[in-house]
Length: 402
Image: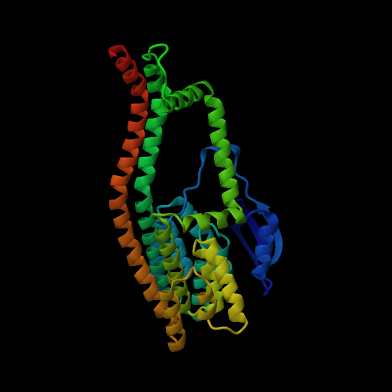
């Protein structure tokens, strides 16, 4: 994303300079105007061509963000001023991208911008929930406590992602290995065996199919490669669209093995975010509007939008949630009890704890289940190809013996 340097004037008439990331110049100006500033000058910071070619920004991971948030909370609790804290963390942060961002934010805050407004300049690093929590802490004067809750939220989110990664990493690697083995057999092994077939031997259907695929891959490899690239591009473009995201959601939650796991991860993340926001003093409707997009599910986001509209209309929180089949009865019952007792945040935290434990248990079970199943699938696939290659030879030997 392009980086823009700006010069603005605040309501008191003081000039402030700084830098922010935005999609284009108009987006940068719009963001500054929403912060209450009068834009005097905006200029895109263009890197040299050689730097653009050889430099690549290191991604800010959730681990980097979690560590930074916990350190920031501890230093603010110790009474160190915000700008001094940001400068200090900028110097000691190992991630160069995050280090540069913290330095820019420190200078912006020193120039008069609030902390949450400085965070808004980097939407690719700091999520909506991060900005909203910091804003609530800044307004309420409990920044260190809010940052500590944020770090706990990030740690739990990282744990959920690690569980999903551990459940999907092994199958993905095994299936990739199986694909490469089959491709190598098609390109190099099958052509060698085809020379062993005596002329006039009748080929079984499965052998003819495999031989045809092998011949096509070797002769028209460029067509297959172009087709594969086009297929991947079409899938990525479709997946980036609204219809594609909703289609993937419907498929993902109905997968035979992983569907239930993905759904529990989504519910756990949604409940955890809601509990964190409500505990930080964010109003229910605003918490729903923040938790929906950050839950990672387009389907849940749409349901939350509808729920927010119903709550605006005077309904209780649990009523619109009960209308959907997405939310399990356990969640809706806990929300109802929390709403009646005024303890909605603790109830949602309990639901999140339950589903996070369920995800961890399911992950271990899936890994143990998938290992033998994948080995059987790979063995049957490679074994089927080998049998198809040897069938004509067996038939030829049998006919000669007869």
